[in-house]
Length: 254
Image 1 (cartoon, rainbow, N blue to C red):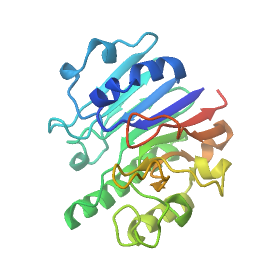
Image 2 (image 1 turned 45 degrees about the vertical axis):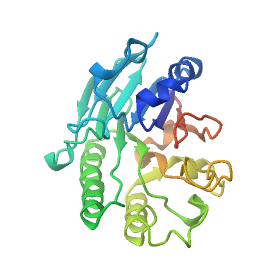
Image 3 (image 1 turned 90 degrees about the horizontal axis):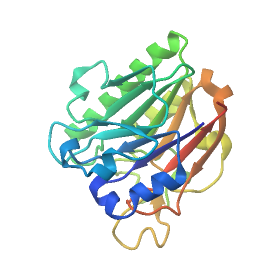
């Protein structure tokens, strides 16, 4: 079973750059989309009716901002939105698919660069998310999490770590949270398979960053430790354009 995740930075913009053709060519079993930036009634029939797929949208209350979606072949037992803390449910950031063998969270984690208040919101969101997935794991569920996490974990995960050490996305407080998260029973699946591979998933539109490969790895598939037996392979698809992020994938033994 192949899971994909992609921050498309606006699904209508991605459509113009070949998104639907890419989806039909790649044929993931589930695709988690972040940064939808649209209401369903603003989308074309081509985006809402892709052959072989169901689709579920979770737009933000604020138009043209944030939002998530999932394209999936097999119906899950249940689809939920949001976290248990209602503070985090106005921006369309979370979709949860419950399958018999695992639960998938598709999340667009907040960016903390706009202000101190947004950085605190980001850190609180991280904690609220962790609380929720811990509860599921405690009940015996295997949890997979995909999305744009908006933090590079280690120096290997971005081109210029020293010059970005005081920038949200690579702040000590953000990186320490990830340290604690992994120590608390979760796996960075790309590093699980490729511990020293230098690969990025996001590049600024400025300074020819993508051409020069001056990027950040801020898009992830996480897995709870009890889901380790499901993990078959992980990949970052740097050849796919259409957004300032590229898609990432996780293959499961299912």
